[in-house]
Image (cartoon, rainbow, N blue to C red; front, side):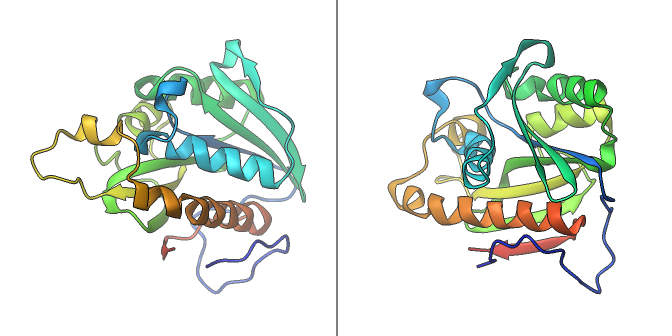
Amino acid sequence: MALLTKRPLTDTVMPLYTLSANKTMLVVGLGNIGAEYDNTRHNIGFACLDKFAEENEFESWVNKKDLKSLITQKNLGETRVILAKPTTFMNLSGEAVQAIASFYKIGIDNILVVADELDIPFGQIRMRTGGGAAGHNGVKSVIQHLGEDFGRIRIGIGPKLHEQQDSADFVLAKFSKEEQLRIPDLAREISAVLTEIIYSGQVHPETRSF
């Protein structure tokens, strides 16, 4: 499991993009607002961002209605980090991301989206920049509003329990009891990944298991 670090990382792998000093980085967790969606597979992006904010002592979330998001921010090293959870519901997430990026003048190469992905098995996390939506309506909305070239942390929630099960029903269901026991380890791993990206300024195409 990766360790949290606040030192820049060195790596011989060419980064997909670099966040230079004194930049602002936007990290967006995707999910649905409302207590009925807590602990569902589709809200794992929200849950992991909450954990990262808690571990790094961000201020309390503020509801910015004009930005259609819950927002908190803090300087980590030389990077101003803005965390956001859209309040638009999943399918319109791009509206919120576009509003925040426009307000804070953040380029697409400094935007990172944390979201669930059904095509990746539970227990895997994948990082990359660009690509399609893989059937994820929240990511699809962000692409529609910004283009494809933003960073992604894709959290596996698959496979479906039954092949014939409707995908929408599956992602909106709660995690199984066994999966819930592993959520704390998952959240810690995502926090480690986010910390590495912020302090190193690099996003590498990578798959991790926890």
